[in-house]
Image (cartoon, rainbow, N blue to C red; front, top):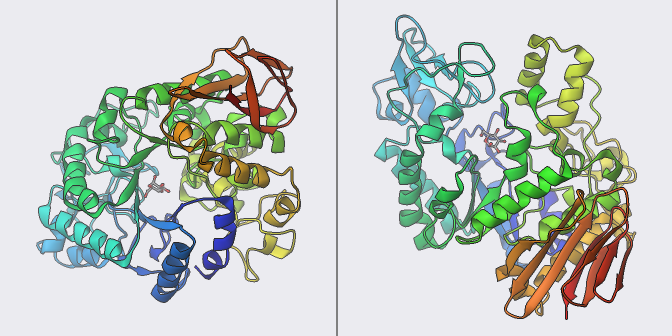
Length: 528
Ligand code: GLC
């Protein structure tokens, strides 16, 4: 936290207005802090509550609001509630969890946890009793059907809001809807007799929405909290329950492209997206949200590989590609999020062995690859494409030891390009990805464009090029064209009228109403 305080001026110069912190609560860190042992304590690994209060206050003076990660589908098995529940399965705290007796000597049903294995494990010390966990076994799921539990969660939320946080990023929230009878499900494509637990969540959206609505009406709305939901697999017609005037969140992340890549149950079956498919996903989300409210465009986060590596063809795994992809993402209709290092155009890391990975999910996916018959080197290739660890390497501040992140020993190896791709080098280079992101943010906030870039419609611009992504933001008489060329050749777009270039990356030319983008370039143009 001292590090974040030190870097607040950097974030301010980037132009951001909200800072989302991944979990900094007390945790045994089985899942990088998404296993919380005390919702109202800061883990000493990050600092103290005084540090947090200082961060909050200093951020405020720079106009930066802080939002916390709200992880309430589950807690840690080290949380007092769970410890008490294990000691006495008849106590009140036990009813905060899903405790079930075995069925015919087996686990209550055949759901597979998100990180592998069965969602059921035995309650320590009770041979015939199981608890449910949709993630790791150290992350027991909380029983949202229990009103007392919900009250305690709301108290905790209010406590943070009273402190002055602006709101929350709401974690794994679609997992809270469950069928408390826990029936068996038909086995899925992994062929292990089990079914991914998300199948149950998909059937229980009604319960989820009921809980979310209560939380919105009783807490978030009256407190005017800003919330961004981690919501997957939503049908377009249900979007109005999540965003907009009647939605249960301020916004939700747009995971369209990500969901397309990982529509299969194991990393080894994930798809590589073409630029055309990426474009299709982007505009599918834009069209769906248009009538309701704002989505939050993202190209990467702590659960995904780096966006440039994941979504662009190899020839654009460079600063040109990063700037063009950033341009497209940042100016869409919505509330864009920048994930640390994205603004430097960081690429995936080359991990050389399974030991270099930290994430429990990477380890499970590695085992799945081997079970599927892949060789060790093929399994590493799969992780090198899809692992969450890519986004979890230390932030590179400079070319020095540990990339200037720490004088101690970082938790994980550095991304291999840190000597070139770091904040210090990019601040010194007027043409860097970082400088481009700064310009993108300030363009979005430019008083002359702010309204159209916030509220204006977003319509795909059809071009004859398979690898061009282009759109128009439009409000009343104002039109802004945003375009990026990921093709190997030049692309020339014919616009409805002449315009003025406001921001470019790479090489861009205009001639009357013809906009020509060299390979890898992007442009933002205000039509006359
Ligand atoms: C969310 C988080 C992820 C975590 C999981 C379980 O998906 O983003 O990092 O592992 O929830 O809490």
